[in-house]
Image 1 (cartoon, rainbow, N blue to C red):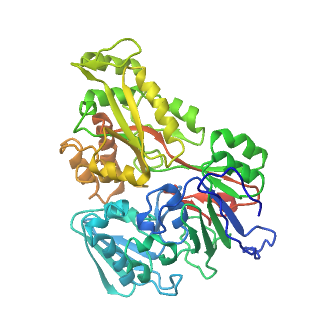
Image 2 (image 1 turned 30 degrees about the vertical axis):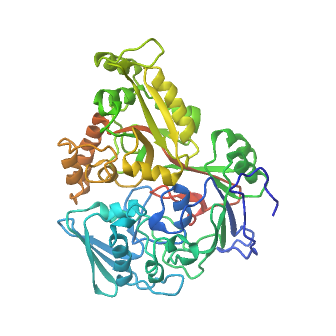
Image 3 (image 1 turned 90 degrees about the vertical axis):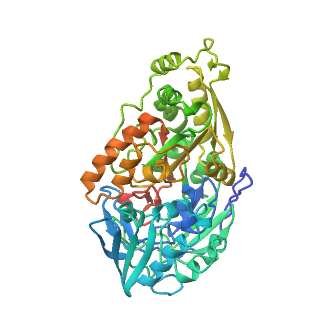
Amino acid sequence: MKTITRVAAAALVVSAVIPLAACGGDASAPDVLRYGLSSAPTCADPAQSSTNQTVNVVRQVVDSLLDQDRKTGELKGWLARKFQVSPDGRSFTFTLRDDVTFSDGTPLTADVVKKNFDALTSDKKTSTRTLQASAFLLGYQRTETPDKHTAIVRFAEPNVQFLQATATTQLGILAPATVARTFDERCTAANVVGSGPYTYTGWEQNRSASLTRRDNYAWAPDVGFAPKARYRTVEFSVVPESGVRAGSVGSGQLDAVADAQPQDRDGLAAAGASIVARSNPGLPFVFQSNVSRGVLADRTIRTAVTWALDRPELVSTVLGDSFKPATSVLASTTPGYRADPLVKHDPDAAKKVLDAAGWRGPDGGTRSKNGTKLSFDVIYSPEFYGNKPILELIQRQLAKVGIDLTITALANDDFLSRRSAGDFDAVYYNVTRADPDILRSRVGVEGPNYSHRAFDANVDPLLTQQAGIGDRAQRLRVVDTVQTRIADAGYVIPVVELSQVAAIASGFGGIGFDASGVLRLQYPDEQS
């Protein structure tokens, strides 16, 4: 394999493999996939996956109880062949397949499911590491195992979102040998044993991960997948420079790359590569306001910020046509999403509300009131390449209405720590989740409460209510109301939707993104 130059500290490293015959009958089809990641996976454990690039790797080795159809949002059986929710939304019964094995040969049983969920709820100190998985299991009481293939999961309160949560990577089911380990040990790939179509065969932190197909894998979910993964070996390599990633596809050194950027599209097209993209569901990129301090404690300021943002300009200038402006506090691929008229670009209206509230300043300058400058800081992690240029453009947009924005970039661990501690004026982030309960878990007062706000009688009862409604249509009517109330309050200010984007060389098919925007390698070529 040729050496790729100009790669930064996280250099491209690819494990040596011996190409074997392709599955599926076409002897000429490649069965080794070399996939360039834009950033390094942080941990090999699905429960601790906190970045998109991490999830895209670990999803290949772990299965979940259910999966979700990306076209309809319908939940389908995976490790569970049947599932049922109690009328009160507090208990969930899963009837497991009897033919599933983990890659170490251990069979899947109801007791294994119980051990997985118990491990995620037994120690509150781990919840900062398993933030999303722990949020899915809030109110968890126990898992009952009346027989070898029946698991009944019980919650203290209605929790209908849990059903969709069992389709996520974070609640993927791991073998007992992995569950018995500490969460530190579970970050090491050699210690992670799943039932997925691939197994870890190599992991160099910040550099690469290698996977090998399980040829006896025979329980793919019915969500449009081929029966068997096309690629015998998958080599994930970290290539942080977008131009190098794109050039590596053109030169034949990589077969697919993540986060293909607008400036690279012409070169990729000339090389015959195709683009696959899907908007992530859940919480789009938002400013979440800390309403306990600074100028964002004033609802008027939050409204002015909402109206000052030119979201289409952010997308067209920085991200390109694979992305969308945020038009609600939910991303457009989330069940229950509705475009909200409150999320608009109206800088004149923003100026008027600031004038009326007594915030004055020179033309083109920063406003002030009673000696207080109209300024706030936003913290963010540069994990996604678009974050920095988007925030810099927002800085210029806000300046046009007299608001000063300062920007603080943090390493991911520092970002998570400061966000949890409330050490910020605003935090810029997104969360992927193909269920509207993401609003309760991230914006509700009983969740992490990054806004550091008090109970809101117009918002929080509705967030709790939707979590207990089993009827989908009735639940989504409540979601329709509450998303507008959250936008009106300005607890989160929508910015842009995240999309997963991959450039794929000619001849390499089967690659696509699922209902949660996660990389999957089992699509038939025509459905990628």
